[in-house]
Length: 328
Image (cartoon, rainbow, N blue to C red; front, top):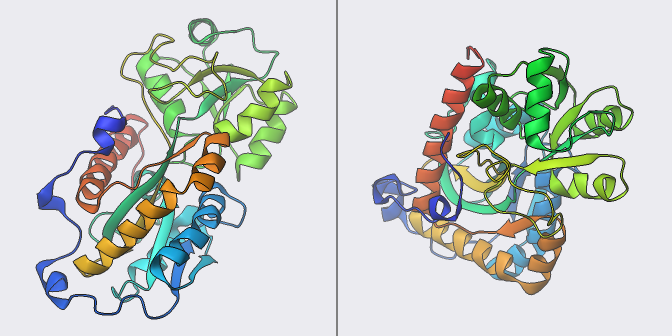
């Protein structure tokens, strides 16, 4: 499993630069001269929607045109993402979504888009500090070593919330099982809220959940935090170690949020969109809001983002093979 850290995030590979030579020749005079539609392929109130609503006013100001959010949920993000892939590559339709862009295809036979070839890779906008591995207080484990030992003593007894194959709740759980040779049962849920409710009620044992969701329940003693999946600790939960610190070297998984356009978007349009995102995530008020939610603005350049997406797609395929996923 490739680590996702700042060195990786700043990696740039010229050969994977966004856009094509034809698109570069087209230029982008006057762009944008009308509102931009930013498609979020998940319901309102989810992480990508909330993040983009923080960023949209700053993006609009930077570009001089409104950035209008359009939620197109369905099939775990497939509906909205496929819709964007079929739009003109003129820079007026964006896709803003999570790491599920590359994580979902190996687990979903109904994916009808190529996460690499059907899109222009604009920027990795935001990442978190990893998911929080939390357990119900009834689980007899206070740290990762104890949790692994418990899983080994009683194979198949422990359960984890799976809020969707390929999601940030599923990928780290399957990596944990693979790296520790443990049998922990996946329990499917339709979303994070439903999974949290059952975890709080003790109907399921553990959950890799966003730090902003975990924080309130951990501080109130309703859940116990075991570790964070990122490569660095988060000051919101400073006493909680990373999975690496807790005994799993090489385990580093963060959820990230990126911006794409349909394949073939002109290079100058891509440059302008990236510059607007860089301005937005650097805004002090945005940074403050992100910090309280365990988020970090990145605004990775397009060439580095294209390389990053390609590597993450490779990793997702590897994970899919490990858990016997059969795309198509």
